[in-house]
Length: 172
Image 1: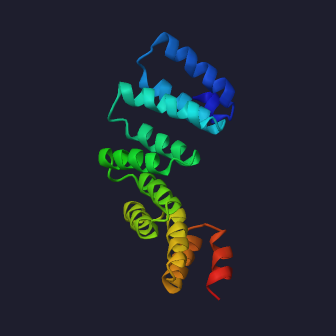
Image 2: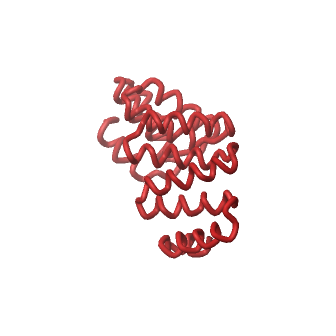
Image 3: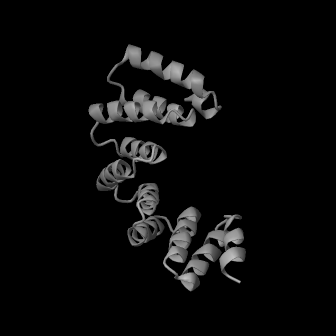
């Protein structure tokens, strides 16, 4: 974990590979190696490691969450939604899983579905500034300017400086 935390993702992959060679059913080693691979933008390799994590522990919600996110980066939005829905089934309080699934739905032009997921992310974490921003952007897409501007303002109050760019663009 130390190399991963210090940004030495190549070193982290090497270390986790060594840990896996010592204990091939150590789910956390596959998971952390998958995260390091994502940081290296090796999303296909990350998906493989998250799949191995899930094969060892089918209730590992974070593995579904990260695999879904990696699939999103590879434009596999339907696969992303499937994994993120599984992460939510295991951990219904995961604000990130709802946020990521909302992004995947947005990518498939399911704007109403995305708004529902961003709203659920906010219900699970009322200080989740990025969820307010994404929900606001989706509301703009639906022509709900007034409500979107409220979301942008809330995101700004919660510390998202880039929310003010959206306020300036849409809320004047």
